[in-house]
Length: 182
Image 1 (cartoon, rainbow, N blue to C red):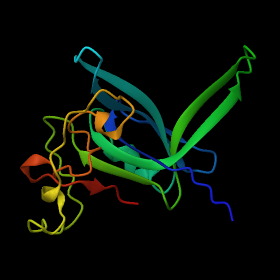
Image 2: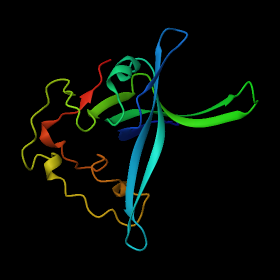
Image 3: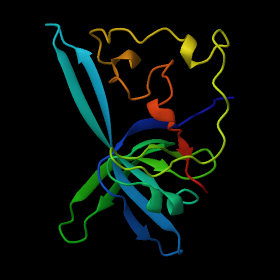
C-alpha cells in the first residue's frame, strides 16, 4: 500500500489583521499572511536573515475563533495542508496562480502563542502540566541551540525564538500557549 501525506506546520508572526469572508453556505473563511524568518551565516561569516511570507486560509471549525482572536503582530502556529490554486480573471482573461496553507478539518490546527508586544490579553485556555523535573526528558534537558552554521536549508538555520528548535523553553514570564476554541 502506498501512503500519501500533505501536512505542513508554520510558526510565525501575523502580518496584518485577518480578512474575513462569509461564504455562500454561511460559513466563514479567514485569510491572513504569516511571516517566518530564517537566519544563517554566509560564506563570509556574516549573519543573513530572510523573511518568507505565507498565505494562510482558515475554514470551519477554526474560522470563527481565528476571525476574532488573531491580530497583526501575534505569534501563531498553524497546521494544515499545502494547496496550489489557479483562477481565471474574467475581465483580463489572465490566469492567476498561488499557493496557500489551508487549515480545515480534524487534523488542522490554529494555535495562538502570544499576543503582540504591549498587549496583555490572556492566551491561557486551561491548566498546563507542571514542568518536568531535570532528567525527565523535558525541554530543560535539551542541549542549548548551537550556531546556525552555514547551511540555510537546515532546521537549525531558523531564527532564535521562532520555536523551531527541538528543546525550546516555554515563553518567559509564565505566558502559556493557547489553542483556539472550536
